Image (cartoon, rainbow, N blue to C red; front, side, top):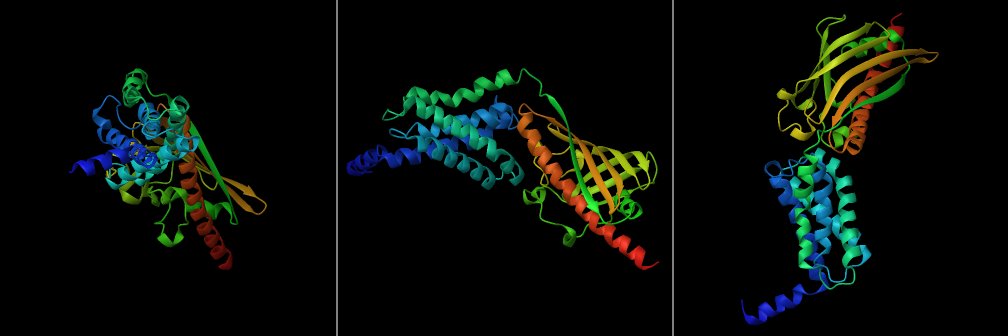
Length: 332
């Protein structure tokens, strides 16, 4: 490289555009590096406060440090771009699936912008960040050992859904006690499928009584064994759920969002049929476990995804029960 070229490059590195580009690049690559090494570092994996919240703060800070006299707009825009670069590269490199990217995006953006705003407030009048400020890259390794001293709290949550059905209780009961294979044409667009969660396929029961076991199957080889704990024909069906997580292929769900894993589980389900003047209202309730150091956020996502699954199932039951009811009436 000639002396002229080196001088030109050096001059370019001190332009505002170069500061912006380097900031996004530094932040994005730091995030990817932390993800690639998360399992083998002190951070302890991706399902930690240190990774989910603190790493984005560092990404946001790094995106501002090379910028010459950053503006407040930079504190919002550059962390957003750096975080998007981190998640995009993680998806491209297949170290994260679509489900995890969707889950992580909102909280990562919030904390990366927080890191950007804090950095802007410290050095908004300076040409370039003090090199000592780059020590912020060590922050997750300071927080992680403190976090690891505490067990993840267990948050038990209940998600309830219901749907009005123009059919009698007998027709609805037959559609919930067992579920023949759900065809692709019976499904409606839903949040859980749009982010890559497997769709429900079928449910069969070995015997219709207390203690009977339902096998509920989802796409991708996901299986739940459901032991019946309440069996009231035409009124209620409840069951304990045993997630067969060891049978779930790793290509179906990322390990840190696997149902039955250390962070999430579905424990119980219950259908109740409420008769009304216009048919019935079918209620579906699930009890979940969420175990992370950021349960407020993780629990909100678990509730939303579970509600989406339940609404999808109830819609299939409604359409099938109404057809069954109409066939029964027309045959009388």
